[in-house]
Length: 236
Image 1 (cartoon, rainbow, N blue to C red):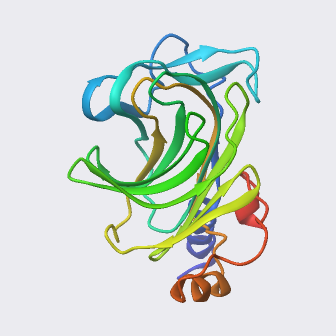
Image 2: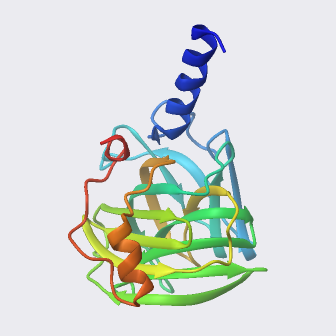
């Protein structure tokens, strides 16, 4: 293998591991973002669209879900991650039944994926698996989730270990082997939630350590404070 070929392969490997961020700011408003599949799990009519919002963490646009469906989801088409992370900033705006926002990983299709979410109507953070369109709760933590405020939500996943971080603090750890193949990452809401999303990031390097995995193997929480998050964190 010559030097040029080796350099190209190393560059491709580095590129695939590096985080990417979507801030929606350069995308046309009034419709779902190109390169994403805006859909749902279960019945209903979701409405995903890029809109301008004065409160956006990165100006000027956000992705808004304002329809009503069992579980509105929006998947990033060109993603395929087995291990890594997915992170987003979200703002629960309104909803009588729910005011929730969350992230999806290892998504095989609209009916099979992992999801973790925070709910301002219930003040909790929860992790689920959705199998054949049926959502099953796996673990929950009571936590203050303020409506009308921006929050940061992240899931790190490696092998069958998962750690959920909410507003810079580790919230949940869980292990499961239902979905072992690589899949898409994306966004999730529930019912009549109107939710804003911004700064969606993902990458192939997880922050989960051997100590985290050992703790989860023993049934305990993953130890230690939250590690740095964001599009640059998995490169540190």
